[in-house]
Image 1 (cartoon, rainbow over the protein chains, first blue to last red):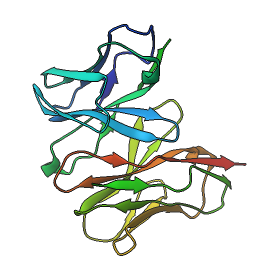
Image 2 (cartoon, each protein chain N blue to C red):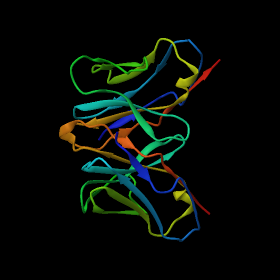
Image 3 (tube, helix red, strand yellow):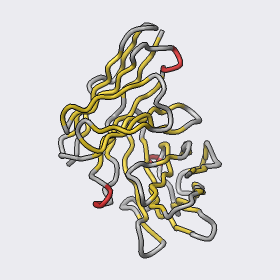
Image 4 (cartoon, rainbow over the protein chains, first blue to last red):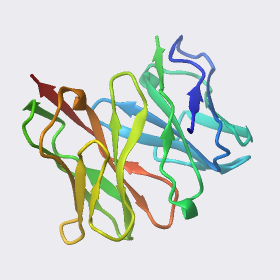
Length: 114
Length: 113
């Protein structure tokens, strides 16, 4: 069974801090994604990676960066956290599109920026 | 560009009643269609998907969805809901030319005894 693990369930950070959200998948998936989930807005794609060291901006990349040095790990970085980045962050992985693989999600990291 | 509209943000219903959660999409290219479910304090899980073939697809727990190309809809239905179906449901599309999913804003289904 595919497992997507997000390192923290809850995080509280101060404005201006550098924040790292980590995600690991154990099924050798090519694709990895970071979404943020906000009430009434659904899931919005922040960044997407289709291979090691490859990344593509999603719909709301401003204020975020990502790192994918190894296939199984995809990190989301908030260079200088702000209160409007308080949200639930969801990581997901999938095989590349030719396999019509669904997304497999982690349980999420609820980040509060004070 | 693609978009997904879930008009109902909340759907309250009594146990054993039928339910329909609506989903409409807009896309200039062909898409695959998905429904995901999120139980409290959990990530999203795939409920069902339409890739090709029969326009009616079913899940293992009694939900079904029908792809209607002319109305660009993919509504989710269940003839008789249980308390355990209480969750948030997300409709999503994936254009055939990308690996990215675009999600709707979600519908919170609340089942009352």
